[in-house]
Image 1 (cartoon, each protein chain N blue to C red):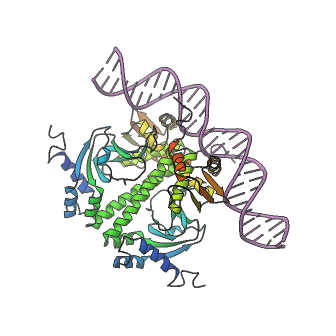
Image 2 (cartoon, helix red, strand yellow):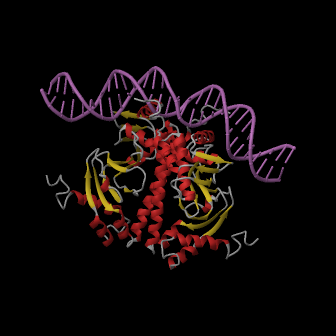
Image 3 (spheres, each protein chain N blue to C red):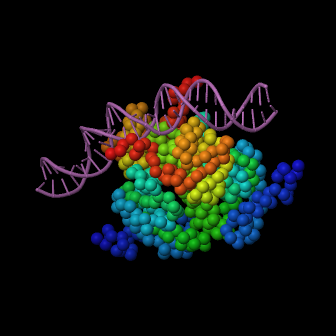
Length: 251
Length: 251
DNA sequence: CGCAGTCTTGAGACAGATCAACTCACGTGG
DNA sequence: CCACGTGAGTTGATCTGTCTCAAGACTGCG
């Protein structure tokens, strides 16, 4: 029982989480005094599938995901029924969200996950003593920015089919590391989440998935097992077609 | 004549640009040795309205905008006719774009602007010696990430009218600092750019602008002068309505 | 078994895209 | 100074991709 409750045992589950965090630091700094101080202000947390990280524990925190999958969702400011999925994050990712005025952002587990939580200000204060660590955080932030911008571009100009294709390609890359050839994986999120992250409805997600299946580009099995025959071909589909352009006019 | 050509005079125009950059650094570090070293690796550049920053000068660089306005555009990988405007940036902004595999990203001047260009790697190496500077860059990156995510949320779930309203509110905030009451300003970008940044066509931008005008929320004069009667009212319009939800069904 | 939640399918409606004129502002050169 | 051309802005008619709604099939759990 002590092994199940992480807030109970001082040694045990959280050690695994911290080890993963140390390993993610720049080479050679995983056992430095800076790393020790960072671990000292950390707090481990386990999230069961579907469980949200309580907002008080999330605001102005840096969250490291040791293992598992989670979604970063934003509930629209003015009572909106659908909430938008800002990003899916997996083991090894470091999440940072500035507390700011717009609708609250929450982290919700898609599968059981292990987290390490740091107060953002204290983390950065300590990291200032070890610039390589700070720089590593900066690099991660810039990568997240890049991803976010790429996704934004999709939302603006791509058709539903292209968005789904792109989503599958990027998930293949994230979950299996494959960027070409064939690839099989299990999606940790449901159709609803996929739609919310792409700005589409559940029905449209299904419909487009159907079209890709009929085009022979993907196979699905059960709820969430996906098999991509040729990632490159799917990626081509993801890039080419714009919302309406080029379909009607043949001029 | 020497005063006009910045690459000619060693003292003159670029001094103004660097002074603005120093002023943007964390308090008390504007004249530190670190600042000197950063300035030493900098290169000033002037961009005329409509002129792009040549990609070689852009890749893996950090760009500080001393004055003027510019757009960050991404040309879609696969021969797409419309390019997406990722962000509008103004005097005081620091731009950083990682060189990565997807379609090239370019910076194009919307008005004459003064820039200060740094090689990204060298900048960060120097900034490591002065963590407060590095942290400041990180904070800017996180803010950009936040903005990008907020915009992404719009693209996904908001109606054309809401997007335009939100765009006007954020421009009012960025250009005049006003967040409430009435506000007059001149948009530095054309209708086409607005559409490309919001994922809408020029015609739709005009049409929705019309609707807001008829609703008494904004006035326009000439090509680009805008007057917002009540920013708060416009912001309400920006938040409330989703793409189709809540309009048809009254259940 | 029965219930609740997710997934799937199909029919109809609408927001926004496309297309095609036209107006207006502005700079160019005769 | 006035055609003239180019490009941005505007307007309206039409078309279509995606959303909405409704109803059924599948899955897992108490």
